[in-house]
Length: 391
Image (cartoon, rainbow, N blue to C red; front, side, top):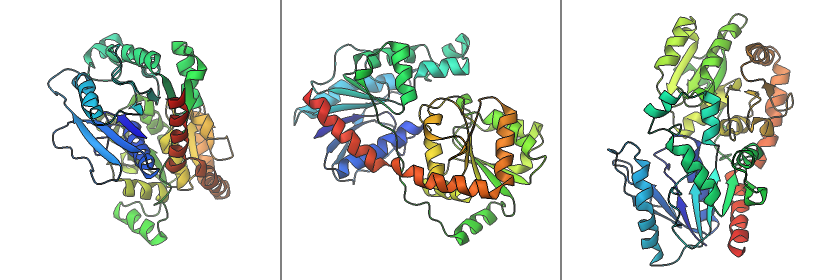
């Protein structure tokens, strides 16, 4: 099947989970024999891997001088798709996230499928984004333009792929979409690469001056309010009263506010900010931590949670979005109410104190995570493509 995969994010240009999704799904579909033409933004200095069998790239013009540079990408996209179809028509157009449908005319006669990772309108409501902020942040997803595009995108798509039941229900309730139009296909991860030797773990701890303490891990965009880092830092201060522990914070984004908060809370000596790390190093951090904490206010899926599962780690996470679909309380993690610092602190402390429970939960996660892998995801997606093209 010839598939046009339209994505503004693709490694090495990654903003969040959508970029990881794009890379993983396309590579696994290619292994199944599908031919993918990936339409990516032509960003100066960004080079895409062109050596994968069954994958080609088409770079679509953007103009960084525009207030919203993705607009330029979408405007040039139809011409690029039509140019490609001069050789052979596409069987499927797959959009990774909201895009393009600010115009009524579709870009191909092939079925249009869109993957929705989360609703932008949920982000605006969850973060209580002010009108002034939405005006100033014209480039971001909380601008006035993006929710309108989201609505058009969801209504115009032939079919919708949701990454969780939570997101599916949000789409139905927010935009009054028929449930038959939406199919849930969970995200996955690469389950390989988590088996580090104890010697490697110890050496990394020593290099980072983490030897001797228990380690709590946070992974997410540092300055994204949805990820709940500010809340976690306040909770971590309480944990330090009883335990000698370090908090490792991994992720992109401006660290200034978080660093200043850790200074004011007098916990900075126990908090390590790594910034963005490579995939190999990220897996190593998951493997060396004692507890993974996800304090999010909103999660359309929760990719970092299944990454922690793959490392066999106990998890403490907020009971929001799709997270309860991934974690069963006290079986493969602890669920706490969003914003409830007492529950968060007591759950972390319980795992630090009781190694038996911690190890048991970690072992349960090693079993649970097997259902979340990109290869199985791609096989399900491939079957779904076949069904859609026959309708």
